[in-house]
Image (cartoon, rainbow, N blue to C red; front, side):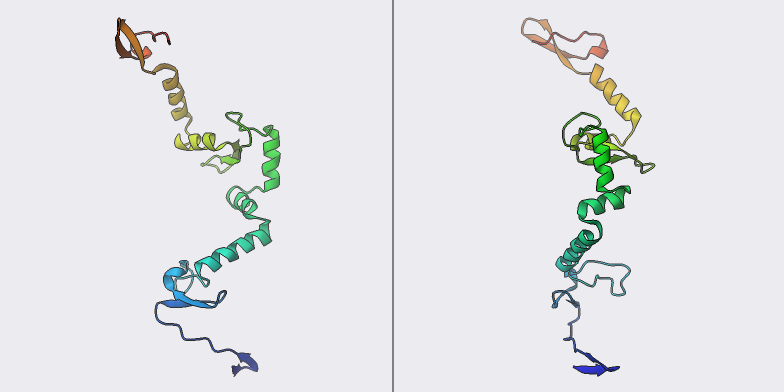
Amino acid sequence: MKERQGRDVRQLPAVPEGHRRCPECDVTKPLDDFPRNRSARSGYGRYCKPCHNEKGKESRLRLHGGSREYHLQRRYGIGEKEFQELLAEQDGVCAICGGADPQHLDHDHRTGWVRGILCFNCNGGLGQFRDSPTRLARAITYLRGTTWQRALIHPGVYQMCSPTRGRPPSPRF
């Protein structure tokens, strides 16, 4: 140990070029084993990836009580308590389809405001339609009137037709 300003300072082992020592696990590893960090002078994080992940989990647990609370607070500005209150207002079901146990918080991508809690499929469906009422209205129109159906034109001969093209839909057998 060296003495520095009245304190004992331990000597760290030399680190080869292209490597870094993680202070948590005290192992020298290649730079690829460290997360990138633009704000750090070296461009890499202080801890190796496994230690970095573990420290993040500990921090989220200590500061927020868990990853879910952290995610809700950071992304939507509400906590688990507000999530549960909103779910209770919806009677514990998806705001669109009424399915049980929805877990996805829906928000307006333009304003960031929370709209409700949806099931996985309804939340994904809104995302696929890019939250556009026009696209959803066109999808409804499509579902109501452009389904191609088989029309019997002669015994054993069918023709595909669409109700919007002037032919009535064939009866379902």
